[in-house]
Amino acid sequence: MQLSDIYPTGISPDQWFMYASQLAMLGWLILIFLPRKIKLLSVIPQYVIPFALSLLYAGSALTTYFTSEGGYDSLMGLRTLFESDQFLLAGWVHYLAFDLFIGAWIARNADRLSISRLLQAPILIMTFMFGPVGLVLFLAMRMVLSPSTKVSENQKEVTHA
Image (cartoon, rainbow, N blue to C red):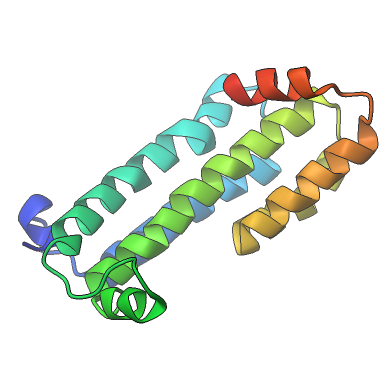
């Protein structure tokens, strides 16, 4: 089964890659440059785009994983699994969806902490380019800027994110 069996559009994995990448880029541009006080502009990169990318991921990954060689049990198995363009696409879309979702979480929390957009921008760009590096930078900045934050407050914040 191929992605085209679920999404019968005749769109190639290369085209899906391009569309998914452009959609994610739109989310990042909204997140970094547009005002977040406008609810719709906040919801698009936080939920709408990650949801759409997640649907593409589900279609691509679930139709490929069970018919592909390789797996998650070793580095060689993973390499074999990602030899398929369709599963490689799924992996890329996975990164796009999760990194954007985490970027929106960072932006929302940074706004709550009154961290300037100028300080947020490089962290969001790092999250866009290198996912976990941006998250580590934000968490470190949050600890430095608000050292009095209690663990229970952090846990409450994560459960409401």
